Image (cartoon, rainbow, N blue to C red; front, side, top):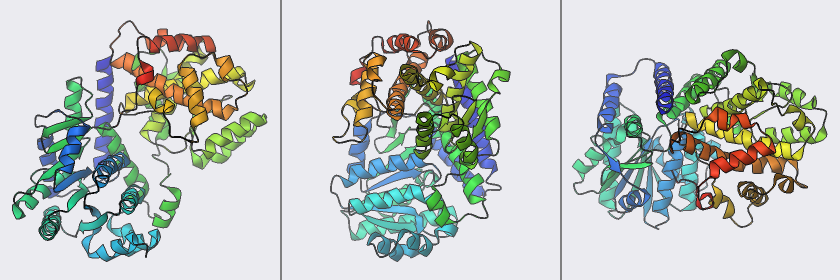
Length: 532
């Protein structure tokens, strides 16, 4: 089964990478050479590391390079984690960014000092023409810098790749020369932070500079780890060069495709509209076909006996078909259910309607599509085996609703991890120790009761449907994490997804058996969410 899973991921990777690069059109020989260099450096031997080693290297460096894949928000989240480590040490921290031309430094300063609004800043630096990658990613860096009173320095310029590297290295070296105690964190495109690029140029201009390079989600590192059956989240090439592995490589190429198809090539693109809409546009014209293809690939990977004819029975809609979805919801003719699904829409949730094979996806991404595909596979199996819970849902049977919410979320999260094994969720410890006064405290308490095996009839007593859904979703994601663990990491060959899980249905008794199987011999109450 593990070989089937790896073959599936290889195919997804090749297809998405090929499609992403095809959208670029012709690229320069220089860019091809930079990519070749990165592949070569990625194939060097590396060893296991951890967050503490990375932290110590970051804090003891004059310059830290953080690789950026410009369309991928996961990279920015990791960048923010590293920036917070440095900023929290109260060091003289300076954040150097590729995304703004150095000639607009005065605009950066004006924005940081509150003299320009967000839109005025973006217009002043000609963001629409000069960079255009999702501002919602980079805005978070500016907000963090304001919070910690860190300076932001623009270090980009026009020209070919080599010219830009030389320019950035000059600014960094000059800054260290004039202020040696400055701690510089450089957020720059991943191809530019290879050891022979900007880091080598800075070292040549200012020998003795202590530098740390932090790569992210390098393709070759990911596949080497898979060949070694390893799930390391941080590895090191040496004491001053690391790679954070927080997502499979095909997810970043998916983000690249999204950008090309919906933002870069959109003649009506407008930065004001983009900020308002947060980029929620249709991911692909082939979404229906992709949904079916992903569903078929996933059942093949886990040996679920469903035919393509069965899986073809679905209707997938996004926000552009919201009027149709609203009409379907109104047809439920039950105010409690109508209000429940309307709340899900308002909260940006994706879901399956109970009376038809109709799915609503709030915005398309590989995570959301594979998540909904998991729900689709579950209900397809239930339908084939005459175990559909539709009537119990329409009758609002509380126990039936809660067990359905739990198990839908479990299978959805499990199948989405097949596509993206780095997906994370809040674990038992996190739910138990949530921040005081958290708005989710009530739902977390219900989720803990579910995990601890409290009778469902007691948990559901007097609870609104939306609270049961939130609690079921939180608990279901944790069960999905454990299902993935047992299927692919504990290598328990006696377990079958179809025979030991899907065949149990989605009723309260079936859930009880599934819970016992998944939590057996696990100290689940001590488990915490992974950092990366």
